[in-house]
Length: 254
Image (cartoon, rainbow, N blue to C red; front, top):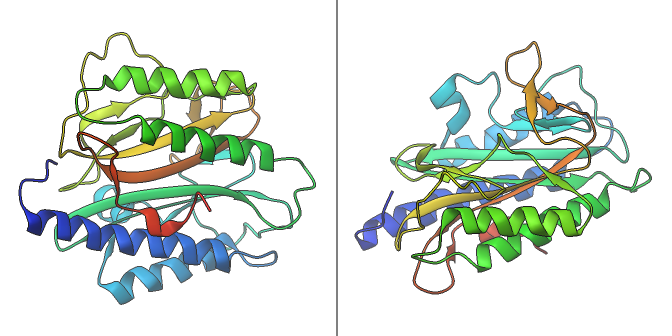
């Protein structure tokens, strides 16, 4: 969407605060011994308390309220009573919601407890690359140039990017134009970021794979060549200068 009046910005800030708060609370609640279903139910209660609706459930009938992916699962992991969190797991939580007709999206990967498998380096790379990408977005900048920046920064650190997972426009629905904000230089994408537009910027930084493929459950995605992936995401408003980071209260850069 494009912000055309103050009430729209207020609406976007309100729903963004909700998803940011929920993501931060779920990260803090995650601990060894609980199931991803318990973690999802915890997040669902927070959304409910705010009067917000789960975006993936509302839009796609996703079988959960948030997406929780563990270890070799890249994204869209279905919360399950059978998936028990363990010390040193690499976890990704993606929280998106609708409130009063406005939609916002954010996500984060993190290591649960002791980093005995060395995932933290990948997590930090994803966070740092998102921060650099967001700081370079303003009206008139080519979408593909931000993709090139993300891919270049990933390669510099020895990582790959997932080419079939992208950021996207958001605001009045979960996915809007621009429909694809890729993590690489898509030479066929000639679009530019527009001032006052709302977009969800996501990094998909991988150890081995370049593409994500779906498992038999129809939702969960893993790497085509295995390995691990870290994702971080903010919903922002594009300006002529530094963007407004609507989901900053998730504190994923802290």
